[in-house]
Image 1 (cartoon, rainbow, N blue to C red):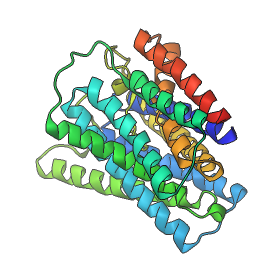
Image 2 (spheres, one colour; image 1 turned 45 degrees about the horizontal axis):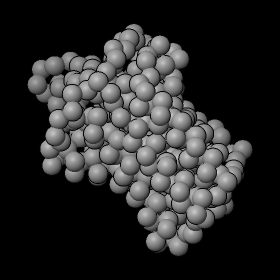
Image 3 (cartoon, rainbow, N blue to C red; image 1 turned 180 degrees about the vertical axis):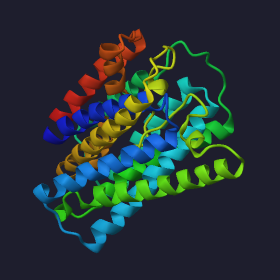
Image 4 (cartoon, one colour; image 1 turned 120 degrees about the horizontal axis):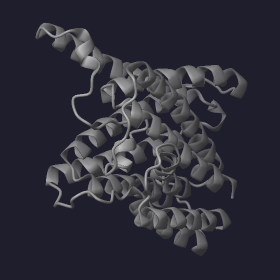
Length: 317
C-alpha cells in the first residue's frame, strides 16, 4: 500500500514541477529552464544527502549517470515531438509508453507478479493516463510518423529513467539522483554554451539565447509542461526575474518527486510505481485549476477519478 501511495504522491509532485517549469518557459528558453532546474534540484539533493545517507559505490554512480542520460533524451524527444504535434495525441501517447515500458520490464524481466486486483488496477491506470493527458479543444489531426516515433521514444526514455533508478543499490540513498542531476545539468549547460556561442557568432547578443523561440517547453523530468497539459487556455507570462525563480522552484520540486519515486521503487514493484507515476499530468491540471482558475475538462475529471480508483486498487493489490 505504501509504495502505491508514494508513487501517486510523486506523480502529483511531478505535475507541480511541470506547472512551475511551464510558467518559466514562457519567458526563458526550454533548455535554460531545464538547466536551471537541474542545478537547483542538484543543490537540494546535495543538501539532503548527508541526512539520508548512502554509499557512493561504482554501481550507484554508474546507474545514476545512466539515468541522467535517459532524462536528457526524454527532454529532447518530448520537446521535438510536441513541437510537431498534435499534442492531444502525442502527449497522452508519451505518458502511456512511459508507463508501459517499465511495466513490461518489471513483469517480464524482473519477474514481478501481481494479484488480479493489481493487474486490473494497472489497466484502469492506463486508461486514466490517456484521459488525464488528453488536451481538449485542440484540433485533432493525424500525427506524422516522425511525431509518433519521437513520442514513443520520449515515453521509452522516461520509462528508461525509472527502470535505471530501480536498478540502483538499496543502500545508495540519494546518490543515484545526485549523479543523474549532475549529468543532466552538464549536458544542458553544454547545449546552452553552444547556443550562446552560435548567437554571438551571428551578431546577436548572448542574452538572446535565453529567450524562448517557440511556445513549448520541457522540464528536467522529461514530462510535459503547463502548456502541454492545458494548451487550450491562455496562461499569464511572468516577469523575467519571476521566471528564474519559477525555474529554480521547478527543480527543487522535481527533485522531491524523484526522491519519492526512488523510495516507492525500493519499497514496491516497478510495474505499479511506473503506472502511477505516469499520472503526472494530474498535478499540473489541478494546480492550473486552483492557481490560474483554468477549467478542467470533463474527460480530464474522468481521468482524475479513475486515477484515484487505480491508486486504490494498486494499493490494495
